[in-house]
Length: 319
Image (cartoon, rainbow, N blue to C red; front, side, top):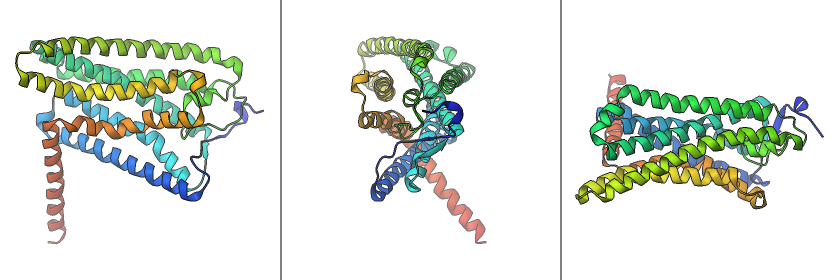
């Protein structure tokens, strides 16, 4: 038996025992990570460089891309490092930092998705008030509130989790430091404290979910009454990507943290963790750009500018 004062590191879950499978998992995670970097990087570049995309919807999408980059960079690089060097170790402070950053970024993303639902609701249901309700100052305040709420909840969860005494060793059954897996290492009498923190999170999550749900009920009511088929198509094309991202985020996240204990198994927990921590940051850029002509056009301009600047730099260096 051990306690938290004697633990200096945690041991993360190893996907495989053979060296070949470890390298295969490294290559798989590397491919996913590079895809996330490329997709979210293109979104950031396109929105920042194209003044036509300097609107509230794309401002919030830029923030979402930043959060996606941060969340996947918190978990995947350490996992790749362990697979590459055949290691399982992560320091106690590194684990605490990983928990804080991941909870902060995931929570902020959820709050931001709620703000984006309000943006779509205002644009479709109250178009005449859109510029008044979502001016530049209001957008900045809502984005700051999302980031700030994530920080506050991450502090609450991290301090509470790492102040609990650990009595069940230091082996975390996950490829990153996940709170439910760390709680399995705590003493049984400590679950009551974590229960109240979890209830706070559930209350906030439920409030956001109810807001998103009723926003889309109102949106679909207005869209289905539109006389113009072109108007309905345009409204759906801006709403469906956001709805798809929200659905992917909520389904995987809620199942990971609220599934019944009898459904828990190492393999299932691992698959669900990959689904909610790795898949959304990689697929969100694809979902948003699939039916968005403005974003596709901005991507082409951004790529063209990169090639032109590269050619100009090449000519300058060879003068």
